[in-house]
Length: 107
Image (tube, rainbow, N blue to C red; front, side):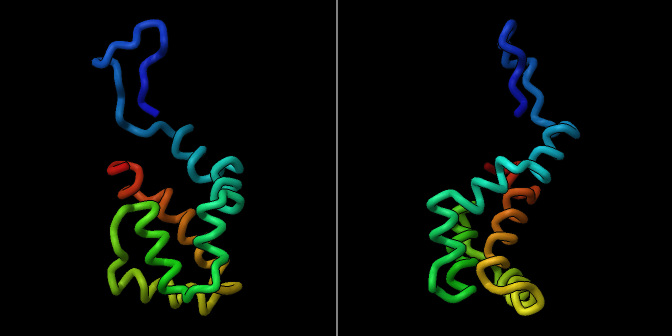
């Protein structure tokens, strides 16, 4: 994202703003969904036998390189109790973090 076309390659032509197409790709891409659901690292994180809090902490460290706040952990617990279970909640958490402004602008 944000790279100029290959014919010029000038740094001054670089645009760091997300386009609508890029935003839609991140939100709706089956490629990214497969990476989350089938990637070995994410599969180990989301489908392990650890508690949801441990899963969430590892996902935050992997995707955002920081620990989740207490408020974020409470939201994850509430979502997991209302959804299909902890592994689905962990997958949804990874998807949400990848599409968060913090990930898009800092990583």
